[in-house]
Length: 290
Image (cartoon, rainbow, N blue to C red; front, side, top):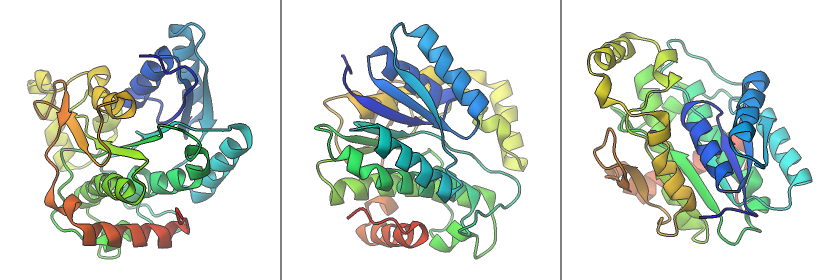
């Protein structure tokens, strides 16, 4: 497959984000790697350029926790690019021990994993509208079933529980993809989950549950796959002509394996809950997709 002439934005420059950007660049796409840390992002872009002769790859700063950074990023893209063909919303974080709210009062996991990507895609819609085969890929998790579904947890209005906030953010990534495809059928919007991957995501997480998981991974290292293997569902959703808008993809054996349709939780199928999420997203970001 050749992606010559296509432009992709990939949020995140480590782990799965790096592997996705590398694969797209190797297929000929112009790739914009977006993330918070300029030094690490530029290093990732240079490494990709070194591995893919003639690749067009660049880093652009983007902090999904900061709405003003998202606006500046989108403005730069609109000023410098005539078209964006795909946006892969890969960046995320998992279960920080302490609560942190951004200036809009949004909990960090919800902001970075979900809401920042909602705003990013919304602001890039003028560029996506010019693409004949426009794709949006979000990343959920096998841990996308929060103990309760309460959108008040987006702002920690009912108190902070790191695991519930994480699960809510990842469920919302899935609900968003389904709803985006429903509202804009000409956008192939898919959600994926990577299974269990050997990335820094678990290493940066805190709390008893994450310590227990790290111990399990140490004893049973074979239950996790490489970041390159974990990137396959996202690449399938972004490039395959067989990818279906509104679908959910993940490893065949849940934790690992080739890509296939994944089991979608009932909450993601609930049109009423998706409408509530969309309304909240518009209110918190001020971004209306039109």
